[in-house]
Length: 217
Image (cartoon, rainbow, N blue to C red; front, side, top):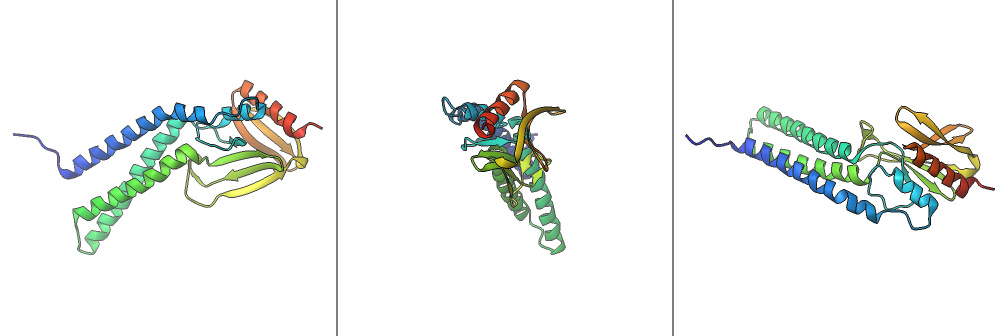
């Protein structure tokens, strides 16, 4: 007797294979794309900033990624969250169809596919190009941009909050140690602005470059 998979199982396996293949391709492209986003030659601050991108594909040379997260973690979360959301949406659609007396498996699959494709497209975009929190080092001051996010890792498609602190309000830029690593902070009268977190040598280099560019008399 020949063993065959039903349509639902086949579709599920196909979705998993497509998702896993997409993650592999994106991971292979990752290193090559980052090479194109390196800071300009001779720009000490730009070169220091590139060490604090957390693997995001960001073209702006003055942007730091505040929260540390690995590209692998974000891609895994993007795929997992998309699958869970698609299953929940399709499950709700199926239950609604039963209540309305219009139970049809093709509609359930349509909702599943549409939700999965839409959620995965946004999640991959967010994982690769849209950090939840960034700090931009501009001539007029430090701009902090933050978005609502899933577990503080994956940005959600909601409105971004922006705040700018002028350099005149910054008393010092220091490196402090936290549980997550060495953090570069801008000290103001209202408290400390966390700019980024990373290895000690990279953090010290960045802090020195910021002080030289923006705080030197």
